[in-house]
Structures are given as structure tokens and as C-alpha cells.
Length: 209
Image (cartoon, rainbow, N blue to C red; front, side, top):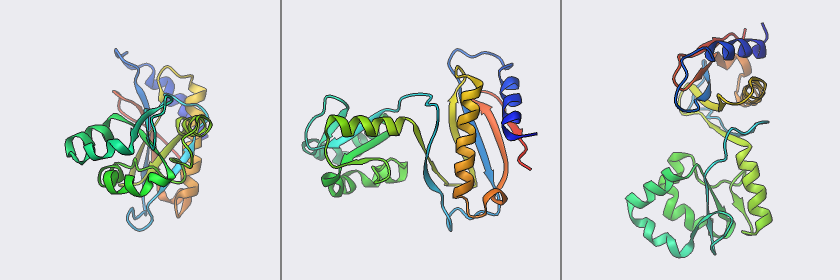
């Protein structure tokens, strides 16, 4: 059975589970094998066809922006306080920055943003000018992308919410799976199995071979 057919059957099964008082997230879990996380780490951005939610984004800019929550250079010194720094990093999903501020951003925020995987990067989070067009374009790009970093031999990725159409969830899952295959050193050989689950359900296995 094709993977997308299996996903369709799995989603039908998951939808029979007890309804919850919140919209559950749908997770795709990819379990890896014959893969050394430290030797060949995967760190990629994947464009997905259907966004499930807008991400909370903040910007490190020289001047305040009306378009986005802004941390200006003047604000940097208050983040020497570890508690304030931690709560800032937890509050936002994504950070973007003006290129000329990046050295200072790295110095002040790098120790917490780096390990959290939220450091502005050239692929996705750095703009030359903090003008409306640049911010809007980057925001759109961020909201229709997801980042995958391997920290262990199992990757869990939120591919949608339960109120999305099955077709949209399946298209997101396939986009993630296909891009991940390209990024893994040994392609499908590195994948042990794939599972799909709702927040509160047990996972359902998808056979890939």
C-alpha cells in the first residue's frame, strides 16, 4: 500500500478517537536507523503546502516596527538578565534580525537562541532592511516552512491540526517525508519506520517498505 494511502487510513482511524476540548496537533514521527546524529546531523527548512498556524515571530531591528514585535538594540542590555532572556525565547517560535545587528544578537542572545534552534539564520531569518516588503516576505516564508533538526534518532514534526482536511495533512506529511529522504545520507535505508498520531492518541505505524 502506498504511503499516502496508509496515511489516509491512519487519519480515519485517529479521527475515531475520543474528542478533546482543544484542536489536537497531528505529529509525524520518523524513526531513524544506521544513522549517527553527531556525524551527519540534519538541519533543514522544508516548505509545506498547507500551513496549520501562524508562528509567533519577533525581530531584532535598529528601530521599532509596527508589523512585528521588535527588540531594538536599545533593549538588548535588559536581556543580560537570564530570566528575561529565557522567557523571551520561550514566547516566540521564530526570530528574525537585521543583518548588521547579527554580531550583537549572537553575543547577547546566542547562548539561549542557539540551543533552542531559534537563532536567525541566512536561510530563513536575516533581512538587510527592516522594511515592510522584506518583513512581509520573510513572515510568509516562515509560516509556510518548518525546520527539522536531528537531535536524536527519532524526529517528531507537527504537520497540521485535526481541523484540517485529510488531503492537506497528507500533502504536508509527504512534503516532509520526501525532503527528509533527500537530506538523509542513505536515503530510505536510514528510515526504520514512520508513525502518525494526534496529541492525545497512540501512534499508528506506516510501513515504508
